[in-house]
Image (cartoon, rainbow, N blue to C red; front, side, top):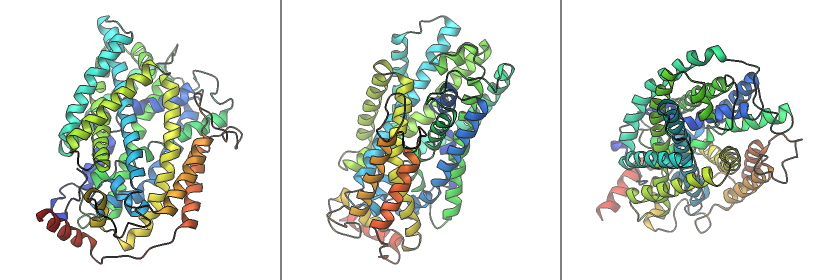
Amino acid sequence: GVEYIPESDRDSRPLNLLAVFIGSNLTWSVVIFGWLPIALGLDFWGAVTSTFTGLVLGCVVMAPIAGIGTRTGTNTAVSSGAFFGIRGRLIGSALALVLAIAYGALAVWTSGDAIVAAAHRLLGTPDGNWPRAISYAVLSVGVVVIALYGHATIVALQRVLVPVVGVLLLAGVFVFAPGFDPGASTAEYALGGYWQTWALSAVLGFAAGPSYVTQVGDYTRRISQFRYSDQRVAAALVVGLLLGSLLPMSFGIFTATTFVDPTDSYMADLVNASPSCYVFVILVIVLTFCVGQGVLNLYSSGLDLEGVIPRLPRLYTTAITAAVSVALLYAGVFIFNAVDSLTALTLVLNAVTVSWTAILVIGAVRNRTTGYDPVDLQAYAQGRHGGRYWFTAGWNVPAVIAWLIGATFGVLAVDSELYTGPLAMLANGIDISCGGSATITSIAYLLLSRTTSASASDPIAAADSGLRTESAQ
């Protein structure tokens, strides 16, 4: 669960963190984010430059957050209580839930479509809605079962998946190379102009880093802050996110330029353009992809719901969030347009999450010297009032107000084919929802808040002692 992990029980290391965030990104849902710029009308170089620019910025922003989990011994949502308050951290838990559920659904969706398309190509089976619905159900069951086992199983799987999928994707580059056309694009510019569409693509690339902000603590909290420096943990996180996202996104961009007669379904186009021998490889990749991304998100969602309802064990909360994720999957595919829904959902979640992330980054930098009090961070789960992070009735008002201001601006500035906010045209159609949200939040938070003094001189030792005493009582 999300309870404090004592130093003596932390047996993970930065290499595991690296493997987890590379492996979890090797999924069709991340490949889709590489295909989207081409589908939005950009050519190969436009897609590469915009995606890479956004991706690097998004991953670098995550560096200060790496040290939070090693110091607090709990996940990111609970740790956010140090900045938002014991009750205010429920904002983070809610965001984490939505992100994990949404991206878990995306992983099963893209993998399920790939299985149906590949089976249709190889075996001539039907490729309509019913086969897709069955495929989603089968994959969901497998992902949920693995997620229920938890951290150790996930880490072990990721360390196996990374080299296997890496080799298979590299083979795909050679397979599709003859049809590569760097000037190819599948449509007119989605937002009416090159730079507007380029900026939209950069925002989607930026999403790769912050989209994992709520899950970082699930793994860093198991790493000792005394055996490994903050810099080493941060490097493992940034490199893992960057390489893990860059490889599948590049594959998506590259292969999308080889499609002769593209449709609205990347997976169908990929399978149709593949030689028969590589279609079987796609099926193998599908299973590993779905496991990597889907399991990471459902495991995280279970922890986050447990953080909201502490009396429910993680096993139950994971089952509940899995059911919600599957329901969202079926609604997104069979009721709404999947591509438009994906773009709009990502942009809205970005705007809200980046605002929250900005406060975490500022708080992490401020707390490098003051440290954290892991005992007081667990006050909500223990039903206690007061303590270092009680602030105003459990809420840090400056942080909450700054987040609301930034998130509201971000949502109102989103520009997508499914949803366009009233502030979307502030920059002549260039999407500023993410950048504007982060900037406004940071300024508001710095103006509204002031640095607080440290409390315990040795919070880790105090936490170990205090939590063990409470457990004994």
